Structures are given as C-alpha cells and as structure tokens.
Picture 1: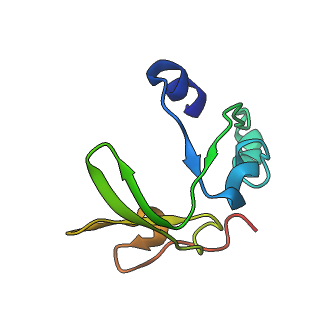
Picture 2: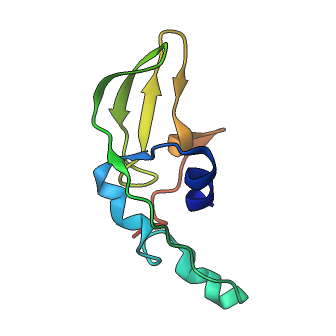
Length: 102
C-alpha cells in the first residue's frame, strides 16, 4: 500500500537507512511467507529519504528522532515535548518481537 499512498497523497517517505532494502527484499520484509497462503509477496518502488537521529521540524511540529533498534533494525522513536511516538518498540506488557527479520 506504500506505493499507492505516495501516489495519491504525493508525500515523501522517510526511513532509517538500515531498512531501505526491506522495501524490495521480500525475505527481509517478511512477505515471502505470504506465498504459503497463495498471496503475492510485497515490494515497493518508493525511494525513501534517509532519516537520522537528532532534532527535526515538520511544519509546526518540532521533535527529536531516536534510533531504537530491536523490533526491527531501523525502528525509530519520535520524542515531542509532552509525549513520544515509539511505534513497535513497546507493546502493552512487553516489547516488540526482535526475531522476525533475522
């Protein structure tokens, strides 16, 4: 769906460099396993922009980017003044699995 979102909304994609190949490598993104269910593995033609640790500003949003590998090698957390967006780094009563991409 990433390609369709980029095409429809004309938005850039930012990723940690360690996951760029997840877009085209079906073994790394896990979608190779879709074949056993008769589904097509997923790849993307999107060319992501590299995001680095440090301070960022997008429109009126100012935040800090922290590389938090574990669930995946390129997991990122976004730290704002009053909250944090941690994605799959934390789950209720646990952490994200770290074995899926190996």
